[in-house]
Image 1 (cartoon, rainbow, N blue to C red):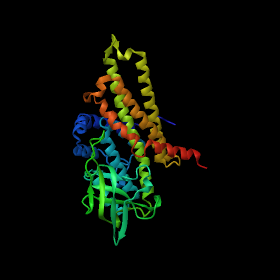
Image 2 (image 1 turned 30 degrees about the vertical axis):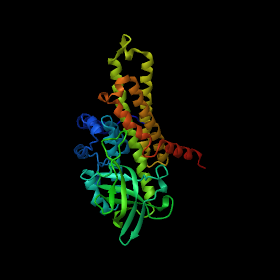
Image 3 (image 1 turned 60 degrees about the vertical axis):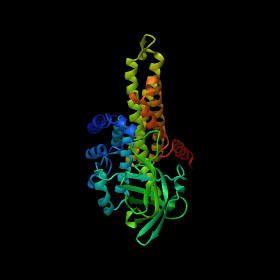
Image 4 (image 1 turned 45 degrees about the vertical axis):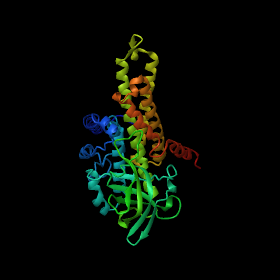
Length: 379
């Protein structure tokens, strides 16, 4: 058991930190306030290999491990959680096509995704199926060499802006075994998008409904076989949970660092905030919780990379803990900033808003507890 990063991993971490500080941090507040989807910045990230982080090198990807991906997403999120999270989703879709696609699909979509010439979205949630994902209702009926899709996906990150949508649809009976994964391209007749949602956070990426009305999708766009879609979706989410947990680490770390600086500078009652023992204790707890969360996330990333049988539950534990801790640290940072924490100039409030949704997406933290409990009680 060696907790030290290799020289190569430290280099990846430093490259991501430099990119975040130079290309993201100076603009993140503007992206948030004006709901800007930063296409050119995303393509600069892709030029560094950040759009196919764990896609295989033979497919043009960076071929990095899940731990190295975690390091990268933590660094990016110290600058802009919302943009880092979109890059995470894009990477998940690229990995799903690399892992479950055939050579023709690799050739068709991966080069465009790895360069971010095309952007990608993951479509599972529906208006009536959130945590109960296996009850999704979007129907795909075979018609010759096509599927005809009817239904609606909800809260899709990148909706309307993305070019490629990996969609979970129902081709069979009720339950998870009736679900199939299809790639639907923007511009397909019958595909449309709802209004841009007005959100508490994650404002640098659009969120819309994805709507299918007699949408004809070629059978050759299917990932895997019919009935394998739910398995594919869940495999993608295991990695997504590590990524979003890593984004929580980065946001929390940025808030902790800002609070440490603020406490050294701000004076009340004749002395610096950093001199008050009660506030020192709160800062110490924030740092300790962040370190504990990071260790859990890194351990889960390694287990997922190795295909460990405990990976699913370990990912659930890491996601639950890191996203809860991340939000709590950011909220505590806002409190320690007092009124200034509530003002946008200090940007703490942006981190609080962006971090809150991490306890909901990629499986709510209540669902994470359910996964953990079922594992404990099985047999």
